[in-house]
Length: 326
Image (tube, rainbow, N blue to C red; front, side, top):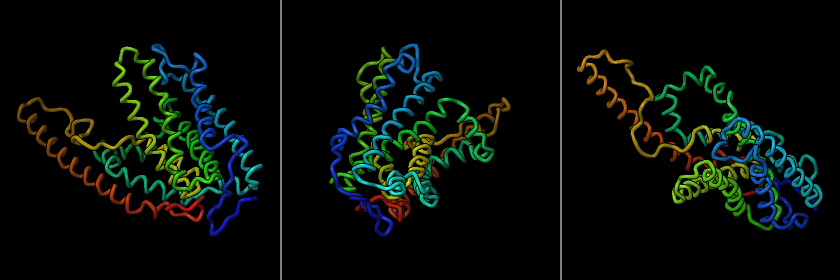
C-alpha cells in the first residue's frame, strides 16, 4: 500500500511498524541511541573536573550524535521504503527534507517572534543589541565558540531531525491520531533532556538532591512544551527547516522574563561626574527609564502572547501539511 497525496495533504497508510516494534519502542530506541553514547567514554562523560561545555567534550559529542542520527535516519528511511512503499519524493516530503518551504519558514519564524515580542524589545532597545545585530557581530561572536555551535547549530539540527523529522512520520504510520502524535512524541524529546540531571549531579556533587531534581523537572517541562509547539509546526507545515530555525531562535532567546524590572546592562548616562546631585539625578533618570521600559516590555509580552494565540493556526497553515489537526 503506497502513500497518496490529496489536496496537498499527506495521507499516510495506517500500518503497524512490525520491523522495529511498536511506536513506543521505536521512540525509546532512538532516544537511547541519541543520549547513551555521551556516557560511554571518558572523553564525552562529564565529571567534577570536566564540564559538558569543554570544547573537547562538545566536539566529541557532536560527532557521536551525528552518527546516532544517521543510524536512526537509515532505519526510518528503510521502514518508509519497505513497509509504507513510499517513493523517493514522497519520503523526502514526509520527512520534511525537500522541497524547502520558504513561506513556511518565514511564517513559523514570525509566529515565534510574536511570542517573544517582549524579550526581543529588551534585547534590541533596552540593551541596544540592534547595533550588534545590524553589523552581524552577534552572529559572529556566538558561532565563534563551540558552545554556540552546539546550542544554535548542532543541537537544533540533530534534535529536530530525530525528534520531529524521523519520529513523527513513524508515529503517523500507526493508528494513532495526528493530534495524539503531536501530544505524545514530544515526551521523548523531554525525556532525552533528563540526562542533564545526571550531568549536573556529576559536576556538582555537593549540591543537595532536592534542588537538582526540581531543576531537572523544570527542564523536562519546558522542553516538552517546546516539543509540543515544534511538533505542531512540523505536522502543520511539513518543513524541517522551519522547526530547526524556531528551535535555534528559542535557544538563543531563552525563557521570557515574567517578573522584575527591565534595566539596561550599563548606566544610561555613562560615568558620573562625582557630584552628589549629579549622581542622584542620574539614578532618578535610570529609575524613570526602567519603569517605562518595564511597562513597554510587559505590554509587548502580553500583546505578543495574544497575537501568537490569534495567529497560531493561520501562520502554520500550509498545503504541505503532513496531516490534518483539529
